[in-house]
Length: 127
Image 1: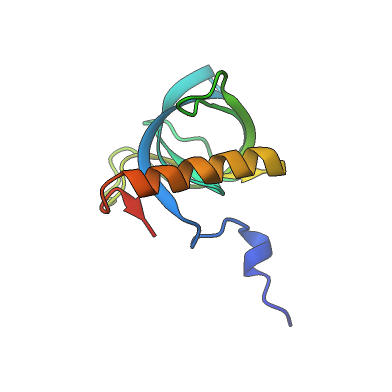
Image 2: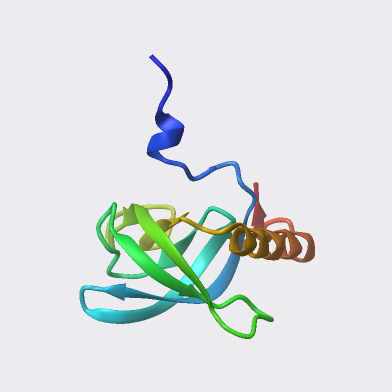
């Protein structure tokens, strides 16, 4: 039987990521919400929020990359949450993997992550 773990969770956990705060907006049950993404890779991001959406929720994201003239619109799926008050090394929030990202957007995000990784101190850039 073939290993299907990659198909079940297509985020490449080995993708270069960077700790950096970016404004991100998304729709929740309560309406349109603006929070901060604090970890970004070409495959997804982590959003700080006291009210994470349920795992497997598909969301429309508007991510503002510095230097961009307008936010990047992305589709994502919540893959993991950390609830407020639950002991965790990570702040309350949710991990979101990008879905159906075209090559141009993925390339722009990847270039942004790589540029930050080269400019920021080593502890901010995680492998």
